[in-house]
Each structure stands twice: as C-alpha cells, then as structure tokens.
Image 1 (cartoon, rainbow, N blue to C red):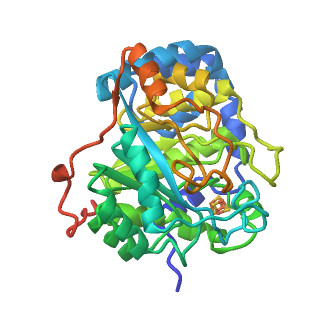
Image 2 (image 1 turned 90 degrees about the vertical axis):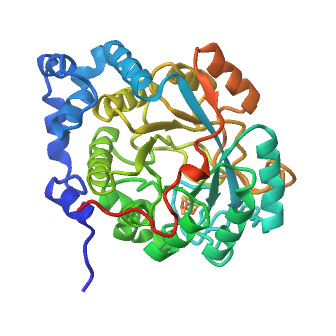
Length: 391
Ligand code: SF4
C-alpha cells in the first residue's frame, strides 16, 4: 500500500493542498489591530496565525515597519554578509511538460547535455570569477544526469568549490545518500505549487505529475544528511498568500524533524521563456513579493532567503539591505553558457545580467560583506553517517 508522506497529511488536514478558499477569507478578515499586535511581539517565531496576519492586505500599510524589523533580525542572525553562488546548468533535456518552462519536452529548442569535461570547463570559468558555492541544475534527464554522473562531477568539483548543491529532479533516499557521500551538501527542490489541482493543471505529462513524490523529496534528502534544504514555490501559478502558508508549514515540519539542516526559501517569480505561455493568473507584484519575504523572515529568524537573477538589479539591490542572505550573480541559464555554448536554450530570461564583480561591489557599497564560500568541507558531518532524524 502506498504510504502518504507526513507533510501531505498536515497540508490536507489544514486544507492547504486544495479547496483553499477558507484561507483567502481568513486573510481578508485580518484587521489592522491584529497586525499591530503581531508587530509588537518579538519577531522570528512561527505560527500559522502570525504568518497569515503578516501576509494579509491589512499588513500592507506596515511594510516599512516590517522591513525595519526584518533588517534588524537578519543582521542579528546572519551578520552583514551576503553569500554568493552561481548555477551551472548541465542539461536542458527534460521528459516533463511543465507548461511554464522553456525546457518543456514539447518546446522546439536547442538541447544540450554537458559531458563531465564540458561541465568542468564551465565550472572553471565560474571558479575564476571567485565563486566557491556552485549549484548544479538540470532538467529531468535521468538517462544522462545520473547519480553516477553527478557523483563523478562532484568529485572533480570539490577541488574548486567548498560547497555543492543540486537543483534537479527528485531522487530516492539512497540516491541522495550517495550524492551526500560524494560531496553534495545541499538540495533545492521547489514544489512549484502546493495546490494539488493547480499542480495537476500545470504538470500535464512526465514523472513530475506525481505531486506526492515531489512533496516527500525534502524528507528524503534531509534524512540523507543534506545541510541545506531549499524550498520554494513558482510565483504566478497560485495565490501567493496561501502558497506562503503552505510552504511555511512544510518548512516548520522539516525543522522539527531535521533540526541540524538549514532551510532556505527561494522566491522564483515566473519569467518569460521561449515557446511557453506568458500570461499568469496569479502574477506577483514587487510589493507583494516584498511582503512575502518580510512575512517569512519575521516568522523564521534563521532561514536563508535566496534571490536569483530572475529579479531585476534595482529590486535585488533593495532587498540586499533588508532580509536576503544569498544571491546568485552572473548566471547563465543554458548548459555550457559560461564557456562555450552560446546557442543552447535558456530556461528563462535572466533579469540581472551584471557580472559577479559588479554585484559584489553593490553588496560592499550597501555595508555588507560578499561571502563567496559557505564553509569548509572539514566542518561537515561524516557523509557516510548522514543525519539522524529527530522524531
Ligand atoms: S520546470 Fe523542470 S521539470 Fe519542468 S519542464 Fe522545466 S526543466 Fe523540466
């Protein structure tokens, strides 16, 4: 019999995975007095009611106060530092049909798969720019981007990078364990949307149709010992306020079980891509995105907040001063894009095309220190042992 992941039960019990209209009503009914009560309390602790209050329309006039609290809290917990990372796309082949993505198997774009040697050529360009944290990204290309491929590549990359993460298709527990042993210490896997019906509507073919296998993946990679657990929703597919509540419940659940790992929230807003839809039913404005980030920071003092080059320079520069902790720079979202392959299709159009040095200069001008390196591998848990679950 198929076992339902524990987080699935939590979301279902709270009606955060479908029939979510009651949450909209509760959010609309929040009053300014309730917002003020929450903002008078010490920031940094999570409850669903607290987050609901902070994402409500009633909280919108309090964004400046929320930003001040978020800034103080972020400096207290993370210091005046911003970590830098770069994505390295190793394949844009994909068996899925996500309706929003340029790598959708039905789009007629140039497909490229990097050999280990080609990936190393790109990696050397990235390392020469100063990065020591690398994110390996791929479409769902299981026949090329295998666990062995990733482990081999990680073995070579560890000489150049102190921290390696992946953002690929969901794997099994043993596969994550093998990758952790090979030196990969972080996984980012976004649920895209926590609403089951909307999820089914956007993921029309391929293994990604399996909502529960994806939802349960952070349990698997956390249990395998991964130190950084990246969560996110693709902003534009569903109501951002309810998605924030669902993602927060997921994060709180993971924190209870895998307390040695750190959660990172990412905020990918849908970007234009070749040959896919361009109208989004739940497009998120700059102001709404700011509110979402602030509300999460004021409920989760110690989570990383990540902003990629999907966002425009002015927006990213503003958020450096408020609550983000990690930022990408100089990104190429096509395989081979750093060194050789200029023609391969991008996953999405980058909005901030400044060089890593330019982004680092902006970070310094804002009074923060750009940090290129996460940690030394010597500080890591013994990979073979992995991390114990705290049940
Ligand atoms: S979002 Fe990921 S899984 Fe979906 S089509 Fe794009 S690359 Fe493939």
